[in-house]
Amino acid sequence: MFKYSIKRLLQSIGTLFIIVTLVFLLMRLMPEEGYFGDSYEKLDEVQKEIVLTNMGLRDPLHIQLGNFYKDLLSGDLGESRIYRPNVPVTEIIKDKIPYSLYFGLAAIGISLFLGVSLGIGMARSKGKVLDKIGTAYVVFIRAVPAVVYFLFIQLYLTNIFKLPILFDIDKPITWILPAVSMSLGGIASYAMWMRRYMVDEVNKDYVKLARAKGLKSKDIMVKHVFRNAFVPMAQYLPSAILFTIAGSIFIESLYSIPGMGGLLVDVIQRQDNVLVQALVLIYSSVGIIGLFLGDILMALFDPRINLQKKEGAR
Image (cartoon, rainbow, N blue to C red; front, side, top):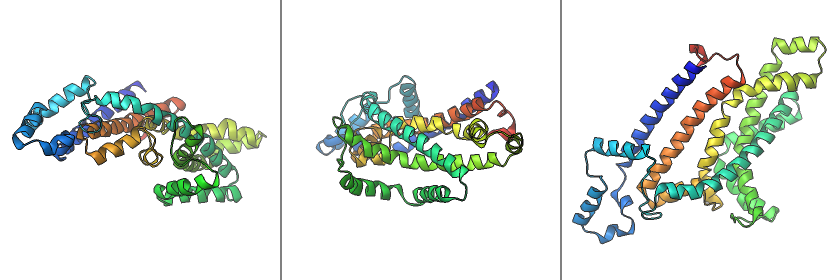
């Protein structure tokens, strides 16, 4: 377990290094206007060159990359140029994280409870009405673009249930639709995987043996089948939790929630290159760290998994 953890950690660090480097290089292809803001049109070419030189953007690329990593390792993500001029990126993000975190945790709670419950019900009633309804829901969520049913919810459910259309921190009622919208995809995923894993477990020999011994069906499902079926799902939990910090890009923009997701859309539209670069790096890091923690968590849930063997690794 320890050797595997070290191996996966080194792989994650290597992957993160490649992604960070690629993001840095790609951002150097962005228009230079993103480093000036409203002052771009007011400056002549000489003044622009002075500004870019002072920012280090006229240094050789390998020097820029070295300076970037030096600042990154010290926790300096740079300063915003357009969104909030001369304000450190870390300060801007610090104000946004709580909104994304609260909505994300609420969405995860709803997704886990309803998704796992639905998956269990579908597995226990395989081929029956509940299973067919659940399958139809999963297919719908998977097949239809999320933007379609997000807009449907905002346009019609607000009228049906008399709910406000935009987020207001002082009105808890405005938190309902964003949290529900964020949870829809998670409910479908957890239900689909829980059903699949439980159906696989039900057909195994140890379940048949337990039934032959006279154990109650409920005890078999809860104490054995559910417990073993949940192990493969454990690897997705860290990613889901970490992505709550990053927020939902579309939903936060749709409901005007001042979180991380809405911030990314805003700074891309404004072409604030420094802030875009920082946010892309954060999203990439969250995904890689989530995968690493998911593998470790899966091994901890089930000691039988020997991830040091070649066939056990992903």
